[in-house]
Length: 445
Ligand SMILES: [Zn+2]
Image 1 (cartoon, rainbow, N blue to C red):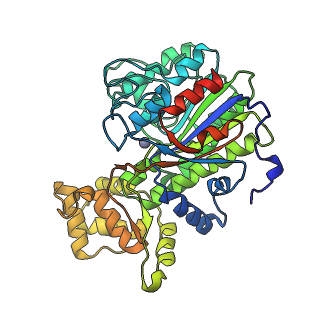
Image 2 (tube, helix red, strand yellow):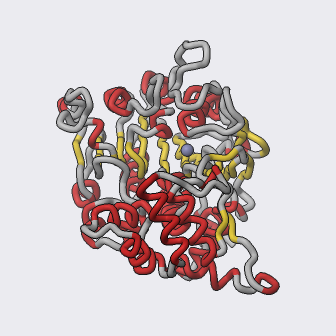
Image 3 (spheres, rainbow, N blue to C red):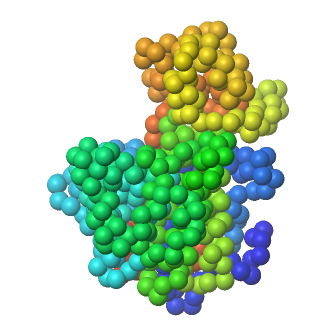
């Protein structure tokens, strides 16, 4: 099944690891794998690389157990801190244990040992998942406190979040950019500059906040020109790391899959999942034929557990319903933003914009309910798990696409792991998330 399988990454006899690429599809519930496979077949006439990898006899498969210290349901900060710091901690915190002591994040350990390090994401670079590998802070939302902590710890930084570095945007008005540029980091702010860069220290900041959803990037030629894809950022980072002798750890995060799930936005979620999958394909292509690079692909937690329901007689309407997702041209985030900005932000305008971007008509009652939720914050009381405009629109969309959601928040489900390369078997079976740290240290320490 594996195309060009002679070239697939393998493991050397001694199991020595030169580098680890740790890939996170943030907030990816297990049902997303199948939907992404089907969606990819519809919009690109080919399957996904992750699907193929699971079917590769050389790959290890497992489940990540991802509870936090204070909940069966983890948030990204506790999950990434478990991987990065080796201890389960409370939700909302980055690498500080419940007893108040600090854990040392993995990239700080590795940097002291002279290893090379990288963080790449489509969220802000100071968001919880990258931060868990390199920062320590009481509150994950203090992204302005995380921004200076990568200095001297992470060689390659790429993502969004310029607002947490630039003095004019930071809440304390301090300049967190100059220390990086003075120390030789190249500040990179657009796609062309990234693709040309040969720097060994990069601070790539491609957006003030998160990088736009892939579905919005694909439908905006200007964004296509100026903002790199996750695949492009990751390709630049991995080529750079492979070009040096030092061992390395690179974390790559598809950060907005989680945001699509929180918003119950199936088009937003699936297009970002495909962008993540393109990135996996690129990573495997770059290490093809090598036997010293370990690639791990997983998620930090489920989110809203989307799934395609059987619809119609004998469920024969499901395929057609699912196919409608391919016609959608924007994320819920952009839809609501554009409606909010339009001079006539009326209920009628809301229905019109939903019809234009998502391809279906809201009933009068639905329009009134959604408009009410947008303008007053009042919600339908039938499900408190879905009681916000995104949850409402997600349910209304589900009437046409067949997609259902458990809520608008993270879930306790274990997440999938695939691993290939030397020592991949460490990631089979059930892997408690805090064990990942020990593996990193044993393999690269
Ligand atoms: Zn997460």
